[in-house]
Image (cartoon, rainbow, N blue to C red):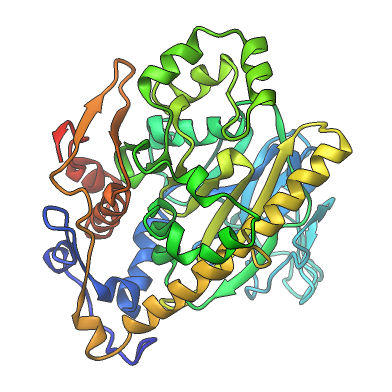
Length: 453
């Protein structure tokens, strides 16, 4: 029996495709509760896709490592003696015991606490107690190294890994939207991750936690307490008539406030000194320097919304934080919050940024506590015998907006509050789930939208 008392079943291609209709916005609630779909997600989305692992600043020296997950596979992200970054499954090849228990640190090698098998930083098996006696010198260590990710690559210091050797390059996978999102973090210069990742578990499906980041409709209602407390000016950040959506291959999307094109044209004429001076004089959005356009693209630089790099990496508050929504079953998600600050930031600025991040999102954040309640109840409704037969209706903005393509190749929509991002995310999810290989997924990608949508 599945989580939510559903009988597990195999899902065929046409059944998967029927779970979401992008033409109507109707989403089948079983996508948030079915155990068999969840297991297929681990195989066809997480093991196949590019997963965020860590930032350069977390593993600066040889031997530095950081523990993360690809789906439910725990991995060690480690820099070896040659400076190469390896992503190794944290499971001894002998009996499967976890080699590394600390979340982050520095090591010369990884030794299994069960029987003492010893692995190098590149995953090579370098030592086995009793090799010459108990194994009679016949053990072939060369075939028993730690399992490694098929590909490990970085963009702007952010490391990603995939278990699928057929995956495209990280650059091609990220596309305009992915590169815009990571560029948002680095728009003002080099950055570093603050030690201490905030982690908590919410009783919700991971996809609900993802699709919420595109949802600016809920802000005034769900987060009214944060507004009434005076901690955050909700009306000041919503800009309901100044929303910018960007859509890209593989399900990547950005949605949220955006600088109108005419206003950005004026900003583009300003020097960096003038932008900095104006930002100091006014409250609200901070003007990005000229270099940000190269990182984010001519349309992307207008965005102050929320990017999601499919499947589960959220970039928020213009790059102050990133969040991983790690799946822990159909009805549980582990959230990891990384706080990011300018490299070498003065202590008062660093402390202020950490304080803002802690009080907005994460387990102690005013906003995430509101969201978690909603996500939990939405997931619970999808598990009921009757509840799971009812759909979700993602219709907002459907057929009302124009998608455009910039000269740089970015696909975007200037609009108001909408559900374009949610629809694009579930369309991407559906296509990933229905495809049995990278070749099939690539061949089935829908054209990026232009015109009415």
